[in-house]
Image 1 (cartoon, rainbow, N blue to C red):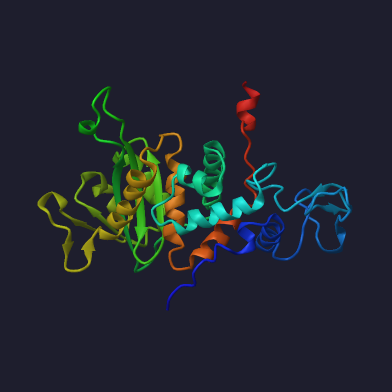
Image 2 (cartoon, rainbow, N blue to C red):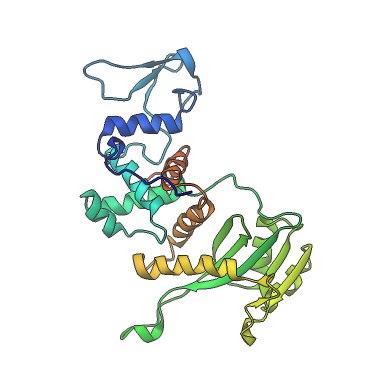
Length: 309
């Protein structure tokens, strides 16, 4: 069955009122509720005065006005809501990612605005309540890779620093990716034991960093990449996690070209999100991304940073 195509002429991508209605449907499925005191129903009034900006509601309990963007990554943003919705659709539909420069050209904004939009949406892609992957009779593939340029491609200056990425993929299920400082047994063991169910069967390459950790799972199988062994018996392989790395690297090298160490975890969240929602349509994925905006208000300076400024 062919997935329905996204209609970019839809008014939610060009009209702020339509975009606001769309966001209210996604973020308020049971009707408006006050983000400050949590009341809903007849305790909420929609303001319709001529001097009132569109979309404002008022709580009868705390008597504070609010809109659907309060308490989300869109709060206090001057970017039109229709551009937020369109940016979410473009990110969700781009299998290998989209650069901020490309978004700038498509939205007609400046680069800083496009960069701001995509990083806020990457925060939406972060799942704060996700549980462990795997379980009884399930296979978890684990592997590490490195993101960064090659020294031979740089004519001057020091060689580019490579960043280590560690990913776990449940076959037929979800992926969890982490930017790690090193790929030592201690670091990987902590992530494996807190991210994957120990009832799972662990599949890795022959690296000795997994030897002792593998004993903590229901089973541990390996393939010898050093001997050019990639599949054995149609079961022993790490091809699923390698396929994920292929998508990630094509995005980094082909779309972004360079990813800073400070923001690598955000890009990993974006690619994890698209992989984990691969079985739904692009439009459904964009809606799911926008739902993730709830409860993630971001400040230019975080409170702890301001306190020490």
